[in-house]
Image (tube, rainbow, N blue to C red; front, top):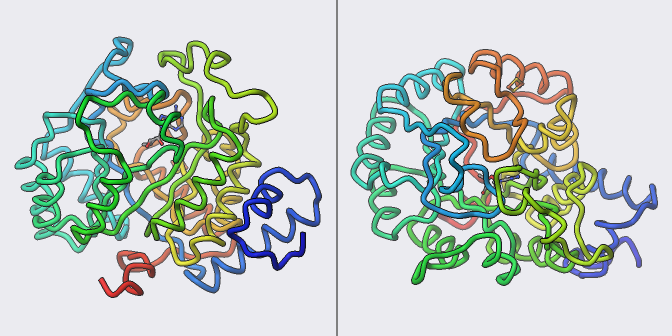
Length: 356
Ligand code: 5AD
Ligand code: FES
């Protein structure tokens, strides 16, 4: 296959995902890094992540926060606790706070609207919400209150696999529909998938990559699926696996390949080096992600008392560190690879290009 085959060509993508040829991989890393530099530059934007509630009403077969998991203690931060973490984001010079939670009915339309308004009127921060599948009227109200961005991974583009891993109450809209509504409401839209979840086949992963491009996403987060023993899949992964020659592995190497291909397919998107990647390589997973296409880091600002309880998967990076420690750690990592921290909000170049 010539190197200049169209990047949307399935066999070109398949080869980049699976080949062991060092020349093909070197070319992929170099092209992804050059594309990242040309499209979004050397700045790395920091998004302060506040995990505001670990309650969830859903039954996801992969996530440790699922409603039937009685082994975790549940929490929901109050507004003053959240605002204290928001103040840290300002102190640390972050451009964005991300408010993330399970699907928690305590986080009502009015409560989140008031909170967003409070952050937007008292700080210069961009506000990203990541609160799961919510009603259109809630999403509209939060956008009117000033929320800038919304993160909702579609997890897999294979509808059958999605139904299996993500049981849906009758009448719930599918995630691709929700992502289109978010776009129509004027949000910057982020999504992504897990890599190597049992049942995911190579063809699914190629579809995921092409879907990133079709949706013209502003932010794309990918990370390895990590087995959580208190989940349906984690309890018996073998039962969920695709045939061995088709099952995608949840390896570190494959995460880099997907990050690099995502950069080539969606040149102007913001792409984080995720905590799940940092979890499988605590030494320099994030750095390698940043050198193979990524341009965003999400330092954790969740108060230390709650961090360990937000256990979507075990062994999550940064569980024992404070916000101050993560801030220093991230800046050190950025400096050591010769990049710099971005100033301002770090809006997606994609969105300005669309004329939003
Ligand atoms: N391993 C890796 N990622 C996970 N997520 C949820 N559970 C797991 C897991 N066991 C990811 C999902 C979700 C995001 C917040 O975390 O992609 O959208
Ligand atoms: Fe949290 Fe390094 S970013 S300890």
